[in-house]
Image 1: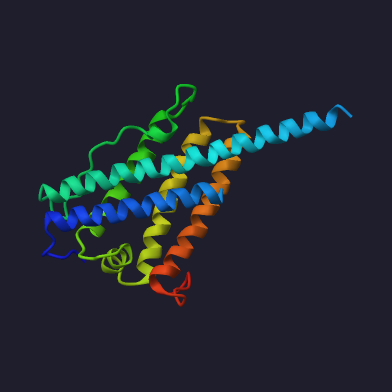
Image 2 (image 1 turned 45 degrees about the vertical axis):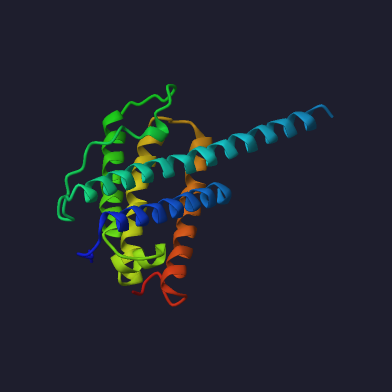
Length: 33
Length: 177
C-alpha cells in the first residue's frame, strides 16, 4: 500500500537502499553460480 | 600422457568461461533492475501516480545485445525484456512509495504477507525466464550458455527463498502467507 506522506527525500533514500540491496543480490548471484 | 594436460587445460578454459558467464549474467540482472529502479524514481518524483502504468520502451535487453548475437526472433527478446522491465518498474514504484528505514521495512510495507511477496517473485522469475528463453533461442547449440542460465536461475531461486525467510521470518513457507 502506498504511503501518501512520502516526499522526494524519502524516495531518494529508499532508492539508495534498494540499489544497495540489488547490488548485493547481484554479487551473491555471481558467487552462487 | 599428453592427453592429461590437454584435458586439464580444456577444463580450466571451461571454468573460466563459466565464471565469465556467471559474472555477465549477474551484471545483466543488475543493469535491468537499475534501469527499472531509475525510471520508477523519476516517475514518482515527477508526481505520476501509482495507477499510471505507462512504461517507456526500454532499450532491448542490453545485457545480451553483443554484436555476435544472432537474433532470429529479435521481437520476442525485445518484448520479453520490455515486460520484465515493466514488472520491475511497478514493483519498485510500489516500494519507493513506502516509508521505511530499511529494505525489509520497504518490502513489508509493499507486501504485507510472505505469500504476496512470493507471488511477485514468481512473476519476476517467469518474466526473466522468458527473456532467457528468447536469448537461448538465438544461440541454438550453445550448451555453455544454456548451462550458465540454468545454474543462475536455480541460484536466483535459492537466494530469493532466503530473502523471503529473512524478511518474513522462518515461518514463511513457500505455500503459506
